[in-house]
Length: 212
View (cartoon, rainbow, N blue to C red):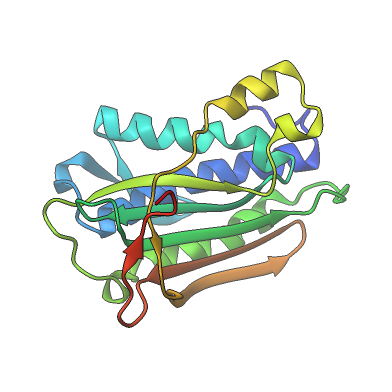
């Protein structure tokens, strides 16, 4: 996509969704959820990564991450989370990307500097295996976005309202106890602040259904 005519926030959001598409693919590969033939070694941001090439898998990751573009651009997305569940849809692990795009940033974007900072996240992910736990054979996973607010709540245009309706409430069950949090990587400079951390059930954590 041509970024020359975009606002700084639009350029930043485009870099973020491209990064998230690759990062999510790396996480799913890391967890061994699919056969290795579903992935292919690629170079992205000068890092060797595992990119999903299985059509349905690649399409799911691509459609979800690119669907977040207008919301990230407007600063509406607080967290993007890759959640692994057991057969009862109780979370086993969550890879959390917490982000904030500076909506007041008006300078010309130094894309190379932003990509250099994000590159460090990918490097960390490639060695994050020891932090995670094996998944049961009947587990599942999904990408979930947590919004600060939805465009429909802020007088959005019809197109934005339609895009917002594509996102449905998650039925992921909640942990009763605070999770164990393991930081993986963070960056805190303009125009983007981002944290990546791993959430796992805390000691003696059971789950409950928020709807129950």
